[in-house]
Image (cartoon, rainbow over all chains, first blue to last red):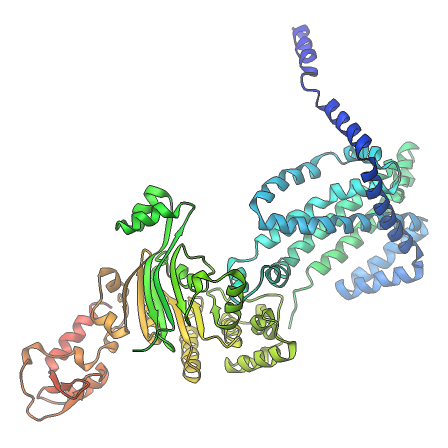
Length: 289
Length: 345
């Protein structure tokens, strides 16, 4: 009986050699579009490098109080206190430089995601056909195990922060596309009619009516994108993206629970600060009085 | 003869992809439901023609689904007509190109919406200035004008507030101010006061009539509320299933309803106060000379006529516009007419 099963699985194993097609495809791309990817890589490298250099150039004694002040003003003194303690903890455990590198990677990946994601979301909101094409692609991007992106990214862009950033962009872009599209589609038909009735051109309708009304939803998408980018840049240390991910990876390789906890805690604290701050900017339209 | 401000001719709106077949069926006299069953196309407006005079408040009435909201949106082309013409100031709006249409909407026509449709991210002043901003008016000029219309609707003290901080009635005042700010000749009001509570509704109707007295605009007003229509309408057009079934003054609609559908609107409405002396004549007294006694003009309202007639034992005469005797009213004819009207309530 088990022989029959083995025979069947053996026979079906290579009926559809999807994996080898993908390999062949990537190889073909490598051979024929190398220049193109080199150009993209150079741009991403320059941008991500500049962001990282910029963050590292800000002295600790400027950045820490700045985060505390912004946090206090937007979310109250409790959060300000938390931000102060969290940053102090990161400094005294010695993870500040790595945290800045991780923050830099997260921010550059987020910015690139927004540059492509917001317009794509707008396009999806305006056209059902585009939406029908983009949605399954987003599902794919979001659910494909994140590690899998690292392989072609490393093959196309080598090692370092470029493949890390690009894999992160692919993983983190879906929420902002989805929520931009959703936010615009949720603008009530009478508000759109009001815009048209008062003589909006289609550009005015987008920038004066649809995007501002959709903004809280879009900001929720931005927040999600930042969170996903942060989780992905940690994984991206496997292709040499650097930052806190390196320490996490090292702790796994050396079975060093203590190092894993310290570096993991820095990630968690960074995540909480980023999440609360970006969320507060999304909800800023609740005015009282 | 007064030249109409808005002249709509043979206007059709059919929702769907194959409108030609549906239109052919409509022209053969099929109903909206038959067309839908045969073609799957939804008839919004079926061959409607009407004229609106300058300075008139023209009320479109009908139940939901009768096509009144579609019709008002056809006028400024928020809904594209399938066929027909909309003539305003010598232009066929249905034939304007998109840039021409945008230009026309900015200058000549404004709209007030049932759900207010204010912009939540703009304060009251910026909401009122919305139309002017779209037209590229400078900040100083548009804010001055917005402030002016806000004071017209009694909201100048709320200019810095956001819509979410205002009550429904106040939000609709902002909606009205936004429409008035562009100083349009034509105001389209889609169930503008339907979302308000009854007291606020009457208050807003009064405000609108006051504003209309100050500056005459041509107003197309959609409503499903007969009392509202009677109160504000110069003329009332009643729609059923995409067709215009009757157009007339409040008095004409009440005294000569075209069919049972029109009559149904009167249910629960006290129509007797829209009657005039001319409706109260006693047929039994036809040809009766009232013998030099008191005469009332034909337009005397029922309550006034009642006061006078019930005070006297002899019938009272009624004269028409050119002062000729039309007939007489007796206490009996008056009471019988009132009891007839009361049956609607």
